[in-house]
Image (tube, rainbow, N blue to C red; front, top):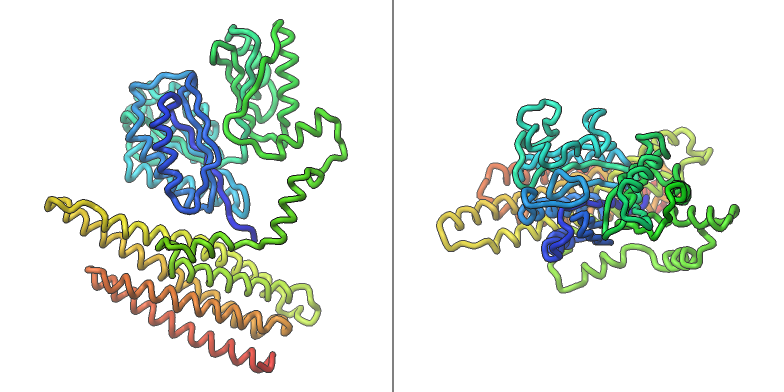
Length: 508
């Protein structure tokens, strides 16, 4: 299974103050494992778009940090711009890129929405695939009336009640959060300053007024030129080349032409490949014919993954540490279990266990993904403890707040490796079953999986115990330690059975 990657493209209602956008970007970049890919600022729209990606949990944390920082820095009562908006952080879409389903992105959107509504007290509306009702699927429907209209209606119009958070609007406005397929934000500038012409062309292009499917469009005046501002919501069904050709034709009808166009943020490579195929009439063209694609594929084949994590593990930084290494070991164990199951599937000799092996492979894949996400989760838990210890303590109130923060962060730092222990025992149980009934030629791999799962349990358990010792809430700490002891007892039973299977079937 591929490493899960989610893209997030939040839009912020600030495109003129570079220092504000940089602070928001810094909040995103501070989250480990999250990569900022692009930033687009537009002074006329007074709007910025920041694109970042990473594993789901890290992306979720970065999105929350960005919303919180934007709420502190952007006042919608002082905001003016060409682009419609209802919030300081106006819209936050999650996009599945690799190893992640749309349903998982929907769950991320709902979790973020609940957290923003509860902790930041900002109204949240869910849209696209995450929408809670049909009239909120379309972003434009939620934005009707913009910030000013929402502020006037949210307290007395039941249709404007948010999905999460309070039914009142502060200076940060509201935020729309959702999940969607990759989108191309694309603007075309015309050789005129007549916005009426841009409006007419937008009306001809957009689906809602009879134009192309999967196209949303508005006419605007930007940098002294009429602009057709568009979102292409499914470029695989309505290619970008088809949109541009329709705009060219409509522009000629109005006696103007296309001056230039621009992308807002990033575009999937497939979108450009399709445009090149169309314009150059390369009907038999394949992406593998691109030099860089073939080169990067060869490089990836020569250099297997994991190097970046191992380099980080060996660095002078305290994170990632033992807890992250434990989760990584558990993920490797789950990967080995899945492999043993898959080399069993399809063999006549093992037909009687094929159904169960398919189940084991699926369960192991899920465990591997969760444990892999735990690598970053453990590092963030440790960093939260360090941040709590760095809190000020000059006054009594600050001291009390610091003690409370340390207790909460330490408790979380115990819970994260405890979850890794639970998962490790599940992996060990699957390794036991795969070793006993799976392909005999892979019995040593099942044994290796068991050893890695046990290593995960042993290492993660150390982290549970060291954090439990520090907790003032002893009842909770003792409950975790009791569960840990039970998990270790269960693991010993699985391990004994696995060793017996290896001896009996492999002669080891």
